[in-house]
Every structure is written in structure tokens, then in C-alpha cells.
Amino acid sequence: MSTNPVQGMWERFQARDWEGAAELIHEDFVGEWPNTAERMEGRDNYLAVQRAYPEGWTIEVRRVIADGDQVAAEVRVPHGDELFHCAGFYEVREGKVLRATEYWSDGVPGEAPTWRAEWIQPL
Figure 1 (cartoon, rainbow, N blue to C red):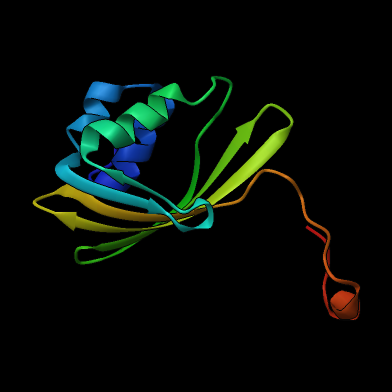
Figure 2: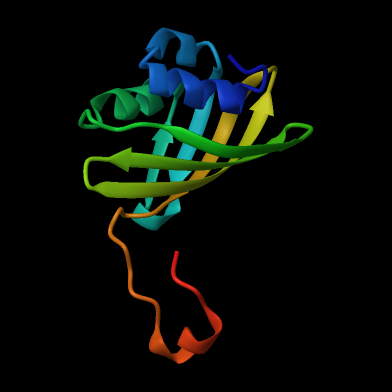
């Protein structure tokens, strides 16, 4: 497992190791999901949301970039026929994840606007 608490948290989520994840998340954790206007206060609430998510998902950490107590992570979450993406920004204190702002895709591929079609390549 990773020494970076953000990387380790995602790895433990993948392993469904909720107790191990709790060790990496600060008791005073605050998490925000701006695109759905949700806020989770406290480690227990954040972990409860993770545990309750319908099974069948996989965590793929694409990259984690740390600069002191500021960490960014790019994560893919395949779930059945859907593919979710998360760009997360985290603050670490005392070696634990204290704050998170996570921007999630909704798992539904969007259509690129036609006005920019001549300059892009589809993924």
C-alpha cells in the first residue's frame, strides 16, 4: 500500500478495507462534491457513502500528485456499463486526509459540441 494517504485511501476503497481507509482519513474530514451540491462532514459520513454505493465498481487510480499537504488525484471508476471519472483535490493534515473536493462525471458519455469538431479527436 502507498505511503501517500490519498493514494492509500483509494487503494483501501478498492480493497473494501473500510477500517484501513478510516485510519487514513482525519476524524474532522470534510468532503464536497460540487457538481451534485453535496457536503459530507466527518470521516464516518464519508465512509458510509463509500460503503453504501451499489457494488460492482472498481477503483483505478490514474495518478496522484502531491505538493506538501496539497494532493490531486485522477481516478477512474468502472461500474457495470458505466465509467465514472473523479478529479479530486485534497488537503492532508497529520498524515491523514482532512478535506476533499471531488468532481465526478455522471457516467454518461456526453456529446462534444459540433463547433469544435475540426480540432478534436474522440477518446
